[in-house]
Length: 368
Image (spheres, rainbow, N blue to C red):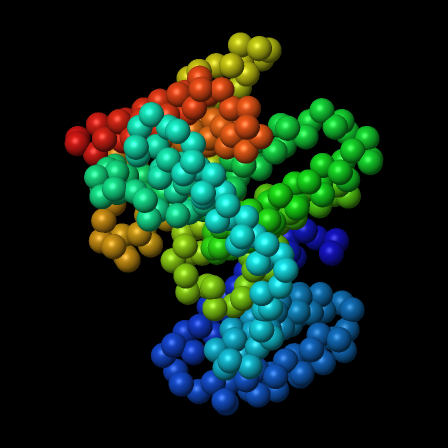
């Protein structure tokens, strides 16, 4: 489309239709009637959009957007009937599940000095929290860092950054860019399947894939357009996911990062030269406003669902997110070298200490 804003309109209208359909399916038991009604409304609306005069651009646009609202409504209601297209669990899914179990066993086999390090690493990288003790879980919950334990787009985003750095030596020639794209897409997709394809992980995978595809094709990568495109694709494939709390929080956090964060970040302008790029106070500011941007959009839903608010969310995120990134980088390196049989004891020790420092810092915050 000529106007990239149309992507936003389409995504919002489609999502609105899916949301209305979810309400219909949950509270109004008229699914057998709703599906033919949606179809009967689409036909005249599409006809109007097609046969309107060319100078009626506003009416044409409204009709076009209304079609996407009806499409979302239809998809949402139809998904509740049980007659949708089943998603087969083919070879990639089975292979990913097998490799996921192998990864867990490999993590368990690493001789970390502290007993709690292995289970926490396994939770951060695979989402398996079965080995965590209650004390650790309570520390994360009391400090407002439960979202770190819940496998989400944050974790896939960190792994994506690691992969991006590792593939930099391949260069930027056309062939190298295609290779980097295939490596990123394949690794992120396999990790998404391996960890169970939760709504927030799928959102991150779609966001990364759409962004990298646009980069490969030399297209504009407007964050809002990428986010709304990912939203539309995810809801089209699985409309019922809109009722998932993880899905809702994931997209609300991304809305804050996409819309509010750039405005707040500009309030502390970057300096010139190396000093400007390495300014510690600006880095602190960026971390703070990133956390605030997410909380502004997610806090109302969290309060509505759980009647709670993390009082020390700013301290928690400024402390935990950098440490979590460091832990994941060290853990991925430790796991890779352990799989190859060449992991030095020093690296295992450093990974263990990083995990212990993360838990200790959150323990201090939870006691405030």
